Image 1 (tube, rainbow, N blue to C red):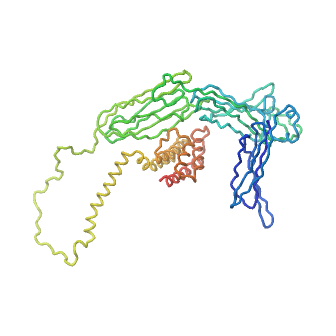
Image 2 (image 1 turned 180 degrees about the horizontal axis):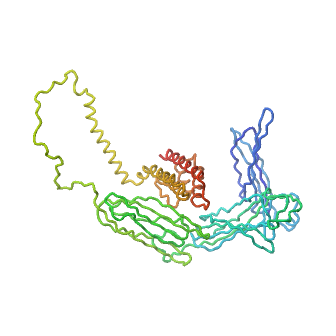
Image 3 (image 1 turned 90 degrees about the vertical axis):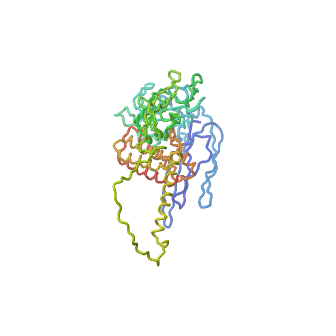
Length: 563
């Protein structure tokens, strides 16, 4: 216990590319990939390729275990490794103080402590949060020796949490037990999504041998460089696990319609216009701002409105992480189209949340205000009205009547003339066209799902056009790109994109069974958009042009697949 094993799987032969083999069940170990290496051997008349996949296994408990064979199928033949037996024994004082030569070369898996050259810590600021309340986890890496390569960090899975990074990382010096360390501090915001006891698994940091040079290099000793050469092996550091007791929100005084928001928020509504004519659109906007899990804020519920057609225009977030707290705003927009004239008082909209600091529920309610709808400028004839004579009686005389007409050509019957048939077909074709147009318009007005599908491509192209004109504002650029692609998917599949995570979007595409060939590309695209929107580092124009071209490509693929 406390030591690690290096497992290497080697594939060799005259084939350059073979799929990476799947690992057998290794549930008794913590498994970490430590890299891949390849080489080519050329001899007269033949060429051989070899690829090594390396892993570090850290045992979880004492006992005897088997590493079952790794299998690879190639051209109908199955190639298999042998079974490997592993015995994990308890760590005793003897093997801690006098390790064997083999043990000294293996990777250390113990939790290093203060007084050593390296050690790590993992702490949280609240071990009894409410569900949905932010918990900050703080990871610290202490080093008393310079490294010439970055260590690799393996975070826990954080099952049961919504996770947000909290930049920037902090670096400072600290004295621990009389020894000076350079400390790197990394923070993340965790929002519990389930109640009860949740365990955060240990974080593991691996320092490769190449990170050390042959001379011990004290980062605080700039002059004493002459030390004996040493052989270094990879060092694996592991924190302790952390258990949280996540409390459910109280049932007492819970408002009707409460949807789980936790934090502290403000709520406001606005109309872009309060005086319109029938069939002219009005935009209603709701903004939630404050501190909490902004991305997972639920949508504002708006009731059906009499004499109005209602269309959901989606939402967008503006996230800030000042002072390591997740804050910002989330905006929702709807388009209201009045169908009858009159004066209308829009109903109040409300939003409820739980404040864990004051331990009480709050309900915020706002009124959008009144809307004055005038009749349409296109007049129609009401029942009982007399039609107006639109043809002026300007002429008071008649033209001469022709009494002698030329005889028709008796050799060609009238029904054989193409012009006659064309004149007969044109009115019928025009009536068919009008019928199709009217039915299409009625369906667009009455079937929101159909309307969203039909207008999805146009809306997405409009978003990409806005992005192309906003290279000078990376945040807005990536927002238009992200909203355009995600809005296209939500319109095509008739789902509400509000609150969907990147993985949920991938699951939606998988469920269609039509987009299997670019799932990974799409997930990478979404992650790059998130990085562009929220990263404090401003991307250059070449990166933005690259992501724009990728968005165009994905939109074309999605359009072909989801039609």
